[in-house]
Length: 300
Image 1 (cartoon, rainbow, N blue to C red):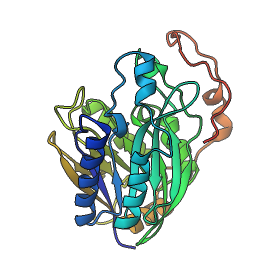
Image 2: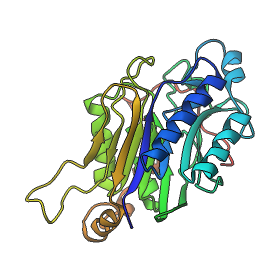
Image 3: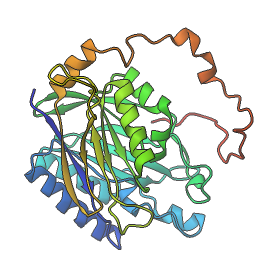
Image 4: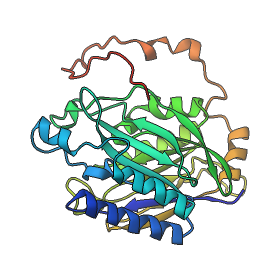
C-alpha cells in the first residue's frame, strides 16, 4: 500500500459562510492536485471558530447536517474522489456542538464526531454540548482500507482520547485545531502518536487568525526503525505560520509492521490495574466549577 497522503488545510475562513465555502473548495482542489487522499480542515471551519456574541448569536451561526454548506463538500468529495474531513459548529439541542464530518471519496458520510472535551473553563466554548463517543471508521481510499478516528483540539490534552481510539482500531487520528501550537501542545501530539503507535494529523489556522499560529503537524508514531541507530522524532511534517496546504505522507504499511512488532499500544497493558481511570471522583487540587455535569449520551 502506498503512502496515505493527508492534506492539512492551514487556511483562513472567509467573512461569510459563502466565502468560507469558496476558500475551502479551493484548498481541497489544491490538496487533490498535490495527491491527497484526505483533506483535513481546522477546527469549526464553518464559523472560523467564531463563538463571539450572545448564545443566540452562536446558535444562529450553527448549521444543520443537511445544510447546503455541508452538502457542497459532500459532493466535492465525490467529484475529487478524495475524502474530506469538514468541521463545523453543528446545530444541536440544547446547544450547538463542535463537530467533524468525514466524507469518503464516494461522497458517503463515514464518520460523525463531536468534540468530547469541550473547554468548560472558557465562557464561550463552555456553552457548547460535548459529544460522548470516540468512533472509528473504515475509510475506503484508492490505496486500500484505512482505520480513521478523530479528536478535536482540547481532546488532545487527555491521553484517554487517543488511547480509546487506538483500542477501537484507529491507525490515523485526524485532529482539527484552533489554538496556538507551541512546544508543549506539539509535544502532546507527539506523545499520543508514540504511545499508541499510530499516525496523527493536525490542521490549525495560520498566523493572523485570532489566537492561532499555524504549525499544523503530522506524526507517524514510529520511534524506532531498524535502519536507524537510535530513536527518531516521529514528526514527519510541521508547517510554518503561513497560510497554505501541506501534504503529510503516512507510510501506512511500515506503520502497520511497526505496530505488529513494537511494545507500545495495547501489547502489554494491564487494564485490571486502571480502575481509577474511569472513576468520576475529582479530588483537590483538581476541583473546578464545571458547566457540563454529564447526562444522556448523544446519539452519534
